[in-house]
Length: 339
Length: 165
Ligand SMILES: [Zn+2]
Ligand SMILES: [Zn+2]
Image 1 (tube, rainbow over the protein chains, first blue to last red):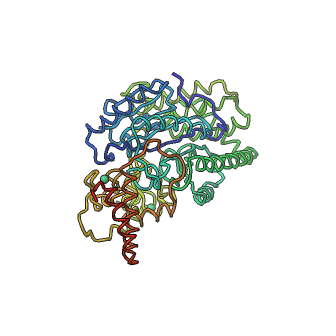
Image 2: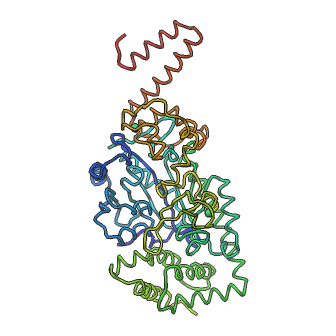
Image 3: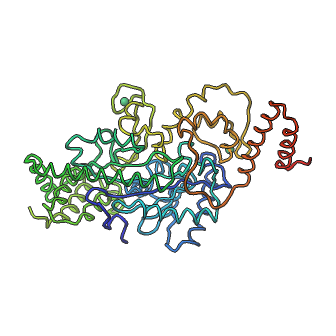
């Protein structure tokens, strides 16, 4: 089955994916923190009944407690569910289309979290997908809503549109040139937040950053996403400029070719090592130095994740076997890249 | 617990993360959370509920509990909401509105909702909001010794409550 992340998206030399999430609560139930496991499963039944009946797409319902640990974590690695959602599997359910572009987390923080995920910079289309699903569920089940406060959420910080839009941006050149700190200060003044997408602390794995909107009350979905989209575009331009600068630099050229060598020839490769090399090589691909489709490269970001490899190749794969398998798969993709 | 980033300050922000195929938790002090981009009031959106608990209600948490008013929708007291950082149900917003107000306006400013509206309406919530408005008006009328106006308002309140005149 083709997944959304295997397809080509707009501005995908820098923008990896776009996501729009809507948090909603059913009017006839108390919030998630006061529900028993049985009541949570009942909500999953109510929601999935409407979805199976009224949506043209074939959705699949999964009770999280039926998934192995790796299968659950793999969902989080591919950005389909939050790390918080997999921290407890009991009482939580997940609905998705086969291509995983449209999905619902049931009983995470709120009763329902509708999510639409697309490759590249595609916020408007993501919102349309999420919005259509939201309207159908609202008409059938009724969401908690107040004229002044908007959609009512378990945490008072999310009221209003209860919408979060986010774009995953790969910014290796800006990071190498030390421009991230300044960038993140700038976007926070514009009501957005920039965080590392994977890994911890100051240097996110593979220079992947998540840019998202903060304000949910007093700004419409359209305005919030328009703002996010235009700031994302401006960051994409800045990254492209930074990449051009780097390509002129001999030290970077050396780093680029060495990274390409790693991807072409390593026999054992950790996820982190893979991502660091990939983020550098991507600059060369964008500059036309190496011939490889950008969506093939972006797909690897999801497919080479640790728990995702384990889920695909066998649960009892040891760490070293996993790193060897990753190296093998990556070599296959980069085999024909001219050195 | 000390902050994992600077190793100096007490960690107050706890963020669930996936690292190397495993679930893990990142513990940060508020300074580092700010600097790493996790301090945004909305970064709690599903990913780090724990962060917001103390941050949302600092001033209201200090208020002494005067009466044990419970939300008719879920049974929560305001104190329980403050301690858990989570509203009990949609009705809590209405029942505890006055006490939530300082925190709401600190976070959201004076904003009111703009954007998509629910197609289905919750009459219960709307009636309650209307009642609150009428009661305020009636109190103002009594204060201003406009007793005729107050009587009219009282009748409308009774009517809305479903009481007979
Ligand atoms: Zn710190
Ligand atoms: Zn309640």
